[in-house]
Length: 369
Image 1 (cartoon, rainbow, N blue to C red):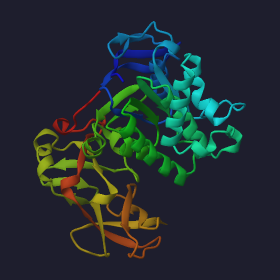
Image 2: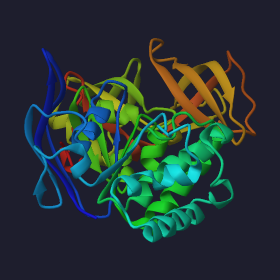
Image 3: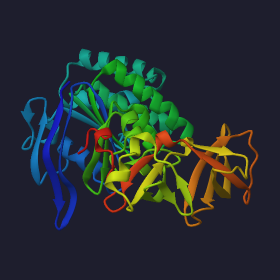
Image 4: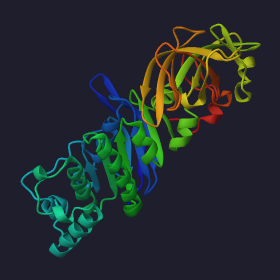
């Protein structure tokens, strides 16, 4: 096992900057997730660490060794790809053993490792099958097992669950977390799925347009996003953004006025008569019966029953152009066209600069890239 350290690493394709000069260090044995929308550079970062992609600037260390000029096969990392990349003419046992065989492991060591990994991943009864005889989830476990059998210093996982159906993805995600607690190898995991990022990671690295937006524990990033992009990317449904004006009497939302919460009271001094963006997660808006004075009001546009809860998409009466994502209990029957009163949990309001998108409470946003 080993730490992974990227020091001002960048990658440019002709005139296109794929990855800006980024820096972070993954401590030995931790599970880090790189997350962001398509095209943000997360897979390129993984490939640079693996040695499959050259770097334009910076240094990459695995353990205490600078690996810029080290070939991919000599970096002692194992990478699992989105498409599994199993050898179709080989059995499961042969696929699991392939990496060890290429490194000329002793036959007894090879057999023992294959049996150990097969037992760990519940593949023992499948060892003589070929990939075409396996389900998607079984193929994914074989791909993971092949990486584990090598006992590398670092695991690199590039969207390994994206080809699985929803239920199998949930099951395999739980297995991955349990597996890491057993093996304890330093792991970097790439995904665009914020649920995977939140549930798997010791630390999350949020990327956008080749730049690090924020690094931190999942819950910290969720509660204290560094900017507007992070706030709206992490969370399902995403956070609501409300354009507001700071006044002497409160935060003005269209024709409505909301009092300053304690943690945002300083905005009255720093941003008086300026426009800002307020961030509010759907779970922090309480849906009430209609026509309650002193509350924001909204009109329902779409109702989406989700089983244990109902997702409502609505528009604010005070700001008709402003849409809202709301979450309510299943027991509350609503339909499109209904009017609601809303109680905002003021203590959970987030504030962002309307121009730059940066959080206006930088002291609450640790781990900025």
